[in-house]
Length: 426
Image (cartoon, rainbow, N blue to C red; front, side, top):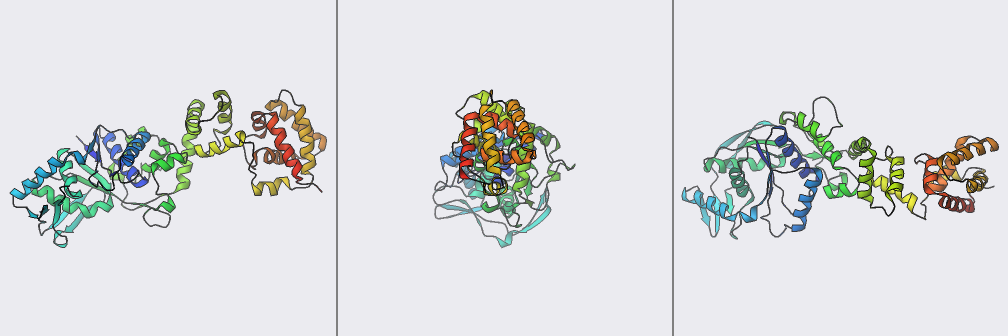
């Protein structure tokens, strides 16, 4: 049976690269009917933090990357590491240097068949002997990793190709312990638009940050799966179950995948549109935590369901309805409010809207259409300035629906503010 593991160190939050590693292991386990194990490599006590550990676990749960065994903690397994180190001492394959235990690296060339890169040859004569147990009694990374993978019966190690340089050291340990190594699959690193390893400038931030930016877990799983892997049919919008059915290590690319925030945003928007209105309302309310009734929020969400690509965008639109202080876009003001006669048009519009009762979309639109005909102007001459006056933006949901949802009092106050500013008056 396939057994894979994700082994983060709690020295920071779960970032994009680590999340992709976790995802590919999870996808492979699920596609093969195997076991996905979570192991916390927390031996670096100075840098490890419970806050980071809890954040990693919370983000994995949020992404839906459920594990079958664990979490296991290396700090609770020191006895196993010590026992294995002493076994190598007794075999004469390791020696003591003070309180530390050092493994003698055999002077041989090692050939590794990587499931992504193919055959890799590495020369052990070029590396130093390997620390097993440090003088403070804690295990070194490569040693603890091997002991854990043996005891947890890991069949496949799927990780970033920055770990290729560790592989010959670990294979030497497997050989010394008389254990057949697992199969290795090293994924190329994620790159930024500058073709360098992904940096914070281009999106190398934590999953927690993307969650705060209004991205959905479904969209992140979808997008991360496409970073270095392809389903083979050029399809990009997929749910987790479809990705699992198509996933194969053979389709992992050998070259680095470029991170593209615009593409992630597009995929996120597609997942939002796939939501039912009920699902969108729930996601929006969970994210925004609005101080309004669900019935009103449902009307608001209905207006913007097909228009926003992230929940942050939805929150920004929500702010337009809630705030008494409208933030006006300079370009929109210049283009639509500073035109000749706009102030006069909005003054008449305010007078007419004040008389509309009930203040519904249908009644507002009827009055606006009648006013356009009466003033002998184009619809755009009224609608565009009206939209900017009440929302501050040149683009919104349908202006009549927006006015109705804002309510008469707010609409009139906003129109009076713009009219008072004297835009478009000669």
